[in-house]
Image (cartoon, rainbow, N blue to C red; front, top):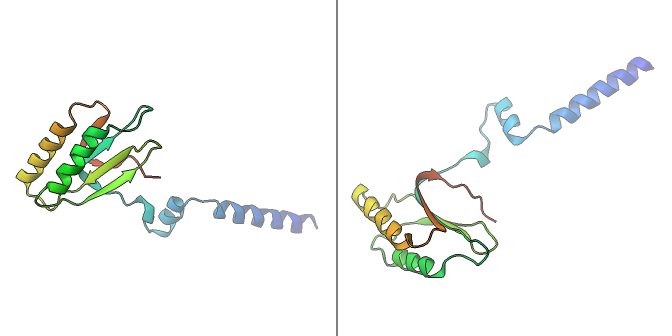
Length: 131
């Protein structure tokens, strides 16, 4: 009877410990990569942050107008990550040549330079996952 209880306990513990592995651990055991770990490196990320009063409206409107009026209409991913409208604009800029990319980034920096709560990161992965 004691042996049966011991065997049952060991099997139960093994089943519980296997079922508690994370997706990453399970994927590494099976040789697959987890689907949620695929991250994109963006050419430029423009982040509008806030310190209790929402994001800077004038810079954001100017930046939105610049994107809309750009002749090549660069595609971007918008990630809203805060409660006050904090947003990241993530661009790969594949539609633009190298020279056009440099010009686009320079203009984005010029439009947002007056506000310390707007940051620009080049050749980076998004730090925010969105809400």
